[in-house]
Amino acid sequence: MLNRSYYSSSIKDFIEDDESRILGELTLHHNYALEDLQRNAWVSQIQILKDLLSDAEDGYIFFEFGIPRMGKRVDNIIIIHDLIFVIEFKVGDEKYEKHAVDQVIDYSLDLKNFHEGSHNAKIFPILVSTKADDVSSEIIPFQDNLYKPLLTNKENLLKNIQKCFSEKGKGDIAALEWEKSIYKPTPTIIEAAQALYKGHNVQEISRSDSGAINLSKTTHSINEIINNSKSKKKKSICFVTGVPGSGKTLAGLNIANERMKIAEDEHAVFLSGNGPLVEVLREALTRDEVAETKKRGGKLTKKEAAIKANAFIQNIHHFRDDALITDKAPIEKVVVFDEA
Image (cartoon, rainbow, N blue to C red; front, side, top):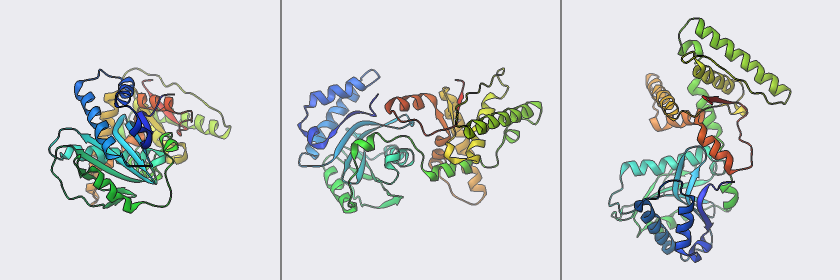
């Protein structure tokens, strides 16, 4: 099985580990041409974190931790007691850029929403712009055990982490079990995804002609097969064929949507190997949800709407890669492979 991170170790062993060996392990797992910029960033991170954690006796550290299914890697995650620190380094930066703050918040939200071991954990996003000025940072709860991001440079990183210990509980996170945790959306995300597609059907998102009728018949037939498979505890695979433009993708979306309404424990998902299609569908649904919420007098950020779409429409390559990391079965009982 593949590892979820490029390098992981107890903090104690990390301190004693040779810097060159750590760098070698990071390089070995890096699937792309290694540029000097990335190599130098790793060297700086290793040195800064070794100095920072030199007196620590407990805890675990991860380099380049892959968030399940999201196709994103966090620079560093440090687990101490029951606290998770999500750290994004901007080596050499003299400012705390907004896009970098958003990046570390996105990582933390994705962990909270899609990584089973992080659902109930206390998560602290930290942006480290190594050459930036000191700024005042307070420990402020944001939502559901997620805290507002801390902005630090390499000099005051330790001080800011120590501030967070005031939020420490009685238990400890078992870091190795946490690392093995599977992709699993939180119930609130599942409900949100259901709400996102509530009331939509093929007739509304396609033309009202014989094509729409055929798509509805296709959806009905596959739903019957799914229900039969479910009642008899067996597996089934269905192939939907048609000429380009006949509505295969719409049929797939509709089937996944129908199953989400019928039973949330099925965790229905729409997968596509067409990267641009995934991005376009997610963006369209995200914009639509923001606009609809605004019409109703509500307020929804694009980031919040995007999280819903991410739970429903996924990249098949990320699904595959995540399955190679664990021997546990995916949580999805109904999976639509588009352009398989």
